[in-house]
Image (cartoon, rainbow, N blue to C red; front, side, top):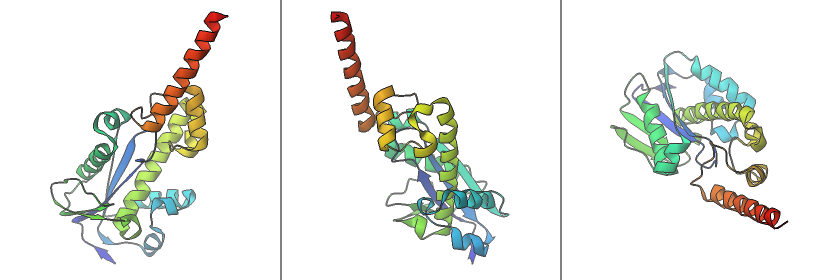
Length: 210
């Protein structure tokens, strides 16, 4: 199957997390996509971690393939809101491509303004090879980033939950409070932080009375 170089697929990872940046990738294929990649490319959430890493390595070394990777920080998420920050990360990823696409395919029902034709595709990471590739690239990059952050902030289990609000993560946030990498504008983070501050204030009050 041959692909026009003018078409890029874009996807983001990390919108549903309560910690860490949102990461986006843009992928453009030229020429023929190898059979094994066509068989394995899919929504990154449906691809096992070991296979994701293997596909990522293949994509990063695949001739005549253009890949752009970018992120929006926790601060940008707080200032802009998560939807606008995700759009910003996707635009940055497209701008990092070495060539300008004529059409950008975006996973979901919304497409930012890339300065060219765009087409949002619901569940596009299961329908478009370029979107699926972007999904895998963004997922691997973000998971690696969260694993590195977990070494400095081990209490939250980011090496396993990569910032998603799992039971363990919420409990750790409740017990330890926010790190600089938590999205403090998110309701879950606010609620747990408020609960912890309330508990600390109560403990301080009791201590003073004793």
